[in-house]
Amino acid sequence: MNYTFEPHPLVTIPVVGEDSLFPVHRLYCVGRNYEEHAKEMGYTGREAPFFFLKPTDSLIYVSPGSTAEMPYPSITQNFHHEIELVVAIGKGGRDIAAKDAQEHIFGYAVGLDMTRRDLQNDMKKQGRPWDIGKAFDHSAPMGPIVPKAQVHGLEDAEIALQVNNTFRQRSHINKLIWNIAETIEHLSKAWELKAGDLIFTGTPEGVNAVVKGDHLHGTVAGVGSIDVKVI
Ligand code: MN
Image (cartoon, rainbow, N blue to C red; front, side):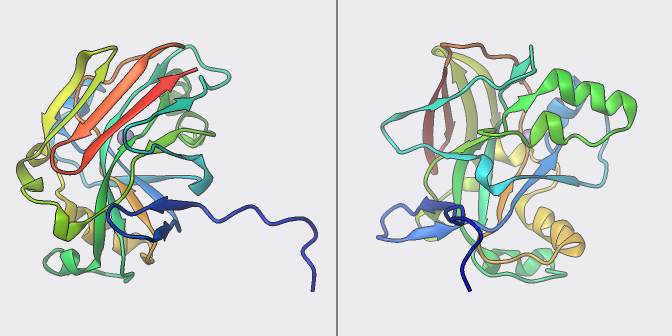
C-alpha cells in the first residue's frame, strides 16, 4: 500500500558521544514545578504535578557550539522563555514507582519551553485548553541528549538562562517541587511511558519576554548549554 502523501520525517535528537539518534515519541511538560516560579505565576504551595504536551515536531534541535534560529511566533505580543531540564526516557512503562524511575531514564538535555504567555493567560482565565499558548510550531528548542552515565551531580546542578548576556533565570535542579523520579511516577500513572518520550521538567522563576534579535543562552551544569536567536 502506498502513502497518500510523503510521510513527515521522524523527529530525532542526536546523542552526545554516540553515533546514534534518539527517536522522539512524545513531548511531555510539567507545569509550575519550582516554587518561586509558581509564586510569580500567582500560585503558592505544593500541588500535585500536572502535565501538558507539545507536538513532537515543535522541537528545534540546537547543535552544540552553534546558534539555532527560532522564529518569533504568530498572534502573540508576549513571547516568554522557560529554561528547563529535559529527561529522555529510554525504557517505557506504566505505574513506575519513584524508586524504580532511574532505570527508565536514558539521559538528559537542556531545553526551552517557549510560551505565548498572553494567549496562555487568556485561556487560563476562560478555563480553556493551553495548547495555543504552549503547543505551537518551533516552541521547543533543545540540545543533544547526554546519556545519564555521563551526567554527574545533577541533583544540585545550576539551571540558568541569559538573554543578551544578562541573567534572567538562575536556580538549581534541587529546587524542583517534584523531583525527576517523582515526576516519572506521577506521569506514568496518567500515560504509559514509551522509549523516546521527553519530559520537560518545569522552569524556575524569572520567566520574561523576548523579542526579535534577542540571543538566549541556556545552561544546565553538567548537561550542556544551548544558544538560540529569535528571528
Ligand atoms: Mn514550562
